Length: 476
Image (cartoon, rainbow, N blue to C red; front, side, top):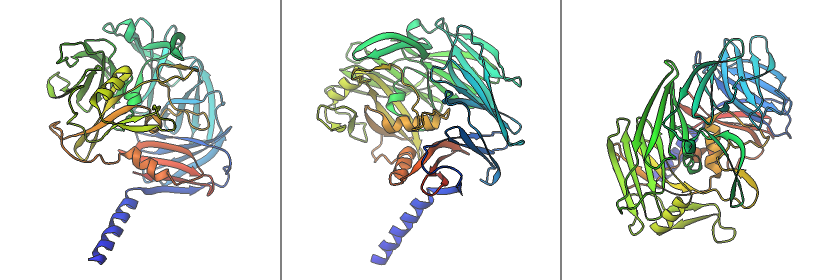
């Protein structure tokens, strides 16, 4: 019996190790062991080659691998100027990989061209020619680079990078159904408990539904999703319905549909609303300090399932405790469990409610909660911004942005498990991929140039070990 138990433990341990397979490992003694590094990857959708860029101050080392992680080429090159600290997206023409960068204010832009044929790179600063528009986001599709810009007149313009390194306007869409309150642009800045006008910024949050999404990001009212050639723009700032605009990058067509919010059962008005798109369904949440309602609908608008709770009811569809993360009434305590439904409703409704969904082994893991911006005095934007790395660099990679946000979010939430028919089932919430990445790197010291990205529908974690001068790429 003891021998069988030992064998089982060894088997489970070996299975756990295999699930975190190191698929690529190489030394680079030329890189410093002391300097913090950044990195990003580019995936060629034509041939599935993987480009890896490791940045060390003014220099960059670039690698190109095939789909089997065999090295095709490698060279060192000057990095782009440090004022360009955010990579927005990329395009690929043959073996020339062009990365679009911007500065902190999104006022200046440049293209960094990496040529794997000549083993050289070049930079050209460009004018996006946005006129009165504000840059909103960049999208890469089939090795082409697109940018979205908008204005306070709720006009959305799509541009594509051409062979002359210019962003050619493809089409301007009029989003007539959104009001000024649900604008594409925000200029609100918090200072303590006061809100002032500030610099204009994008009011759109990019979501990758393949990934665990923090409540902080899911609680934003306006979101952008990309599913291959399809872009979804969702708006949840009005009090009647979610607005979804669908843009097809191949046909350049625009469609619109609205989805009415859940109704109050106490004959009161809900104060806050939000939504989340996952696969072919939309998940909507409506809340107040007295009640909360959730509806799952298909894109035709049919309600597939609904859930409801008020302040006097237990939440019988949760699979985890109610967790409050962030500042609490107790000093040095940043996480606590809430027992009462009334406290949960009060907290999520005092901020921005949110809902997110992921699929684990044919089950739906749904997180329901809210996020409240707590400002202790300094000025900060109301809308969330991407998380910087230690070196101040921001990657275009939405997977890494989601991972960083997931790791540091402050929110109140609980988790629930639904089956394929969206019925609540009992069970324990299993660690998601981000939890596993965090656990994997927890005891690893001296690591830098971290990146988390999807490749061939698998999640990978890459990092450079400063002590060993070694880069490792781990599959999860």
